Length: 64
Image 1 (cartoon, one colour):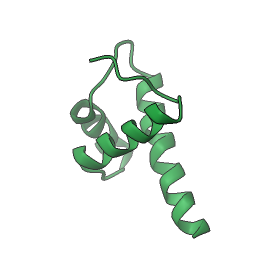
Image 2: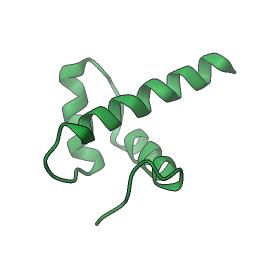
Image 3: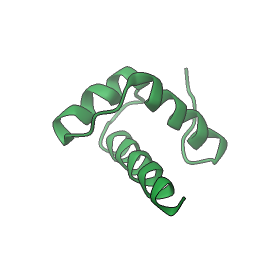
Image 4: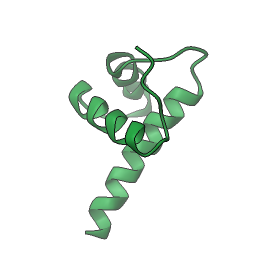
């Protein structure tokens, strides 16, 4: 289970990194596109799932 948590944490950190580097709010499609050059393959649906979870955890906020 610890390995699963590590994978989830790495995905969330990658998403947060993309958001941090952007001067404007981003949706799941834009985040997915920005993850590609980082060699992180994540579907738009997976990004959306993690964004919703991070909204709940107070790490991100849905603006639109």
